[in-house]
Image (cartoon, rainbow, N blue to C red; front, side, top):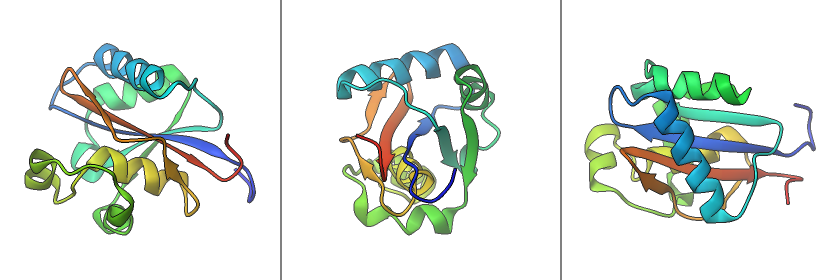
Length: 134
């Protein structure tokens, strides 16, 4: 992606062992909730704590999205921009919302969340858009 191009980033968190079909279903729910469709380029991002979650990785593969694992310091740098605060997320990751921080960090410095994260079936999905995206 070159400078000036927009992108969509989906930040994903989930319970351990969540299968890809559940992750994909929650992504679809989140898109519907915010009234948007998948856009390209597309990134699916999560934190290092979820790097080994095959369900997230496989969902990214099935969507043709780049799968990005972000380190804690990168996620912490965008915490002030997140919309929600989850005590569960804080306890496990030190972040008020892993999915929102991952979406924002992956989408870049001009990113904006479409709204609070969507939570369903043990999966959280946040959507961020950057630069030239509508």
